[in-house]
Image (cartoon, rainbow, N blue to C red):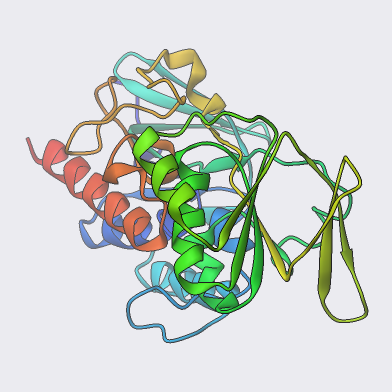
Amino acid sequence: MENLDYDLIIIGAGSAGYPAWMYASRYELKNLIIWAQPGWALATSHKVENYPGVISAPWKEIMDNFKDHAIASWSEIINEMVTEVTKHEGHFHVKTSAWKELKAKYVIVATGNNYRKLWAKWEAEFLGKWVSYCATCDGMFFKWRDIVMVGGWNTAITEALYLADICNKVYLVHRKDTFRAENSWVEKMKSKENIELVLKEEVEEITWDALWMTWVTLKSGKELKADWIFVAVWTIPNVSVVDSLNLEKDEEGCLVVDARQETSLPGLYAAWDVTTNSNKFRQTIMSAAEWCLAVNSVHEDNMR
C-alpha cells in the first residue's frame, strides 16, 4: 500500500473536532484536523451556560480552550476548507481548497449543519445578538421576556414548549396553517396559554432601538413586540464533501452511523450534528461525546 500521510484525518473544528483531536493524540494516532471555521453552531451563541464545568462563558473562550487542549496534545491543524473526500485502494484521499491532497487510513467527518435562514431584514446582522437558531442554547437568557419562535417542525414546536415554561410570552410564527410536527407535540403546544399561534405569516424585518430589539414585523404588516427571535425552520447537514462516497443517509440528509459512529463505508466515521445518533440532540456535550467515541472506534480498528 502507498505510504499514508496520516492515520486519521479529522474534518471539522468545533466542539466535536477538537476533543477528537485530543483523543487521537492520546491514542498515538498520527492525526490532522482540517477546517477553516471553528465553532460552527456554538459560534452563534453569544454565551454558553450549559456545558459541564463552565458556569458562564463566551463561545470563543470555550473554543479557544478546546483548541489549546488539542494543541497541547501534539495534534496538527490546517486552516483550510475540505473540498472532497474519496477512497482508493483501501485508503482515503482528502482534497483541500489549497490544492493539497492528503492520504489517511481513517477519516472522521464533523462538518456541522447549515441553518436554513428566513432571509428577513437584519436577520444576519443580529445573529447572536437578538437572533438565535437554538432555544436550548440561549433560551435561559430571556426568562420572563416575550419571544418569537419561527417554524412548524418538531424542533420549533418542542423549543416553543420549552420557552413557554420560562418566558412570559411565545409567538409561534409559521408560514402555513398546518404543522409537520408530531400531533402530540402540537396538541401540547396548543394547550399552553402563553403560546400564541401566528399562522400563515412570515417574518419580514427585525426592528430595534438603540439598545434592544423591539418587535418583529411580518409580511402582512403585523408587528409582534418581542425581545428575541428564535428560528427553527430546518437544518441541512453539511456533508457535500463526502457526496461522492454515496454514504447511507436518512430522510433529513444526516449520515447513518452505527453505535460506534461508523458510516456505511468502513473506515469513515462521523459525529456531531450530521449523524443519526444521540437522538439528534444538537448540543455541545453530545458532539464532544460522539467525537470521542468515534476516535475510540478508530483506535480499536487500528489495533486489529
